[in-house]
Amino acid sequence: MSPRPRLVGVNHVALEVGNVDEALAFYGSIFELTLRGRAGRMAFVDMGDQFIALGEGRTQPPDGQRHLGLVVDDKEATRRALEEAGVEILPGRGLDFRDPWGNRIQVVDYRDVQFSKTESVLRGLGLEGLEKSERALAELREKGLALD
Image 1 (cartoon, one colour):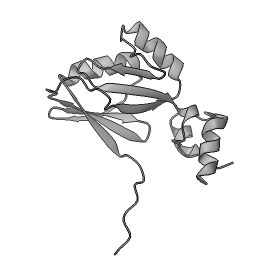
Image 2: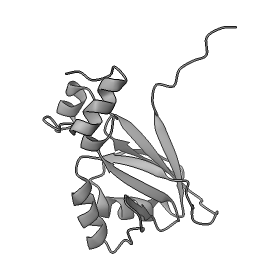
Image 3: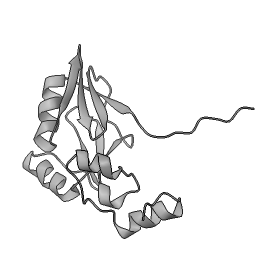
Image 4: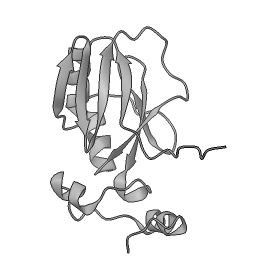
């Protein structure tokens, strides 16, 4: 039996929305967006060195527990942006919300999770000096992934 491939990361995620222009306006009211491009009924938005695809045509009801977890450089700034945009923050211990099409989004702070970027990627994104919390570093050390 040949070895199975290992999961390395996520290249992109596609979210279905009702209208791409409205989705760009909604997400742009919360996050700093860089549009990578458009094709037909799709828009591609950079997320660091990855991207998210917004596709027009969502028809299903709002998501329950299924969600997309986004990593941000400042979770509390995200909370303030959501409040300023009038977006309801869902109850619970995290920072979850639904977009106008029912997609559930969970926001986590880069400092608090094991998800990591190289120093060159952080520098290229203008995020040099963004440090991990001790808890996140402990997770990384436990897996042999810490650079310190």
